Length: 373
Image (cartoon, rainbow, N blue to C red; front, side, top):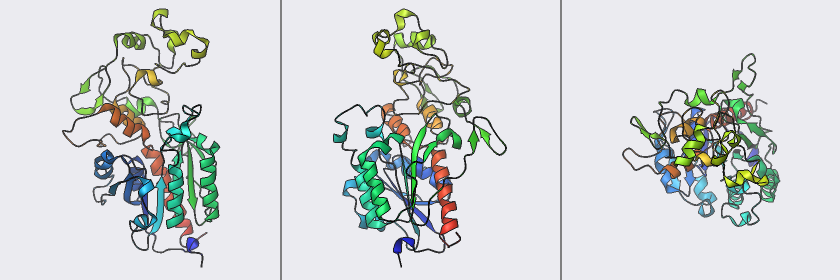
């Protein structure tokens, strides 16, 4: 019998989360009633948020393993799965080496994160989980390392769609975010659940979630201020020049709305005239841009608050990533490093997308694991 196609019963599903970060993917999978038993990440500071946050109090805490995937063995991975469970391996390798911003960098393949996908494939080959979930930027499809990864999956008799690009607003994420979602199965081709939201709501579908829906009820703060009831509702202090710029910025507008003396030298060059989103304000009734690790910086994209004269706060970035309002990123009374927490948030899989992936896995297992296809 082909061990990859062996059907298991009862339907006990357990997942291990590689490159787990602070647990955005884990949290969404748990909301879908998938038992996440452990997460692996080289950044040991992610331990507290990964282990502490659970959607249901009765859930056992997933174990955080502070380790480099390149030093993690298939034997160690296998030992994490409970006996007789259906094994799910999820891994969202860092996307920065494959993003549009780095494609022009000729030396990007020397980035130590470049080869992490190879180690993900190595662990798949050694453990042969029934299901694999992988999320990254769509541009990764153009890279040889991704082609080699998919060739390995096919050689191991996995079924998958390498072209599944998900528009995150279709599933309740209030960002103009597109992601490659590859879910490979040992049983049959995997299909994501039908979309739940639409720009033009139809029967059974909700309208897209907007910036206002996500952050509109947070209390007002000034730049450089921390709200007394939420230490993560804080924004960076702006320079006097940037305060003048944002005061002249219109929601959805560009730097062309500013007085001439406020414009940067690059704006006056032909090469800089296309950069219309930097220093921009979001629109309350529209989707946010893709939340990156730089969302706290006004000059790094359209990260200006729609109405208040500041960039986004940490809490606002987390809400746009669909983390719950009470998500704990640092231990109580611990110092807050703004750039570190912004990286936690920007690197995470949006929780609502993770939940959809988990619910889709549940449905796929129910349809296939007991031979009901």
